[in-house]
Image 1: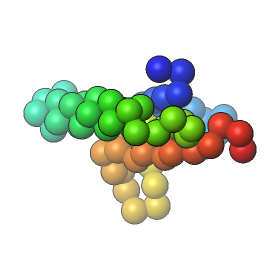
Image 2: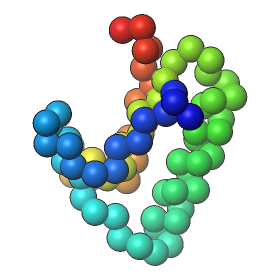
Image 3: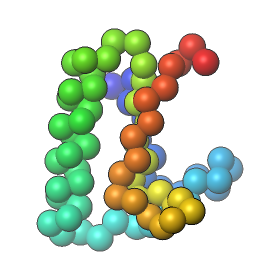
Image 4: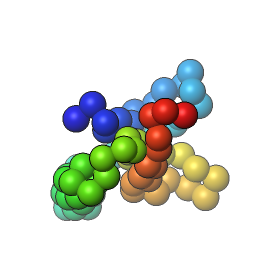
Length: 74
């Protein structure tokens, strides 16, 4: 899965801050959806890569997941 990047922890060098996930049903649902999305992405997209951010800090709060599809050529 070299076309998939997962970011689920702070990386201060690039300004990425995340909130620790809480174990339980919600996290299980998030993880299941990520697996489902990765499977479908790899099946249907042969040119772009995918970055997955788990509970990243954004201006409005901490969404559970942010997906970013990007071209590795750029």
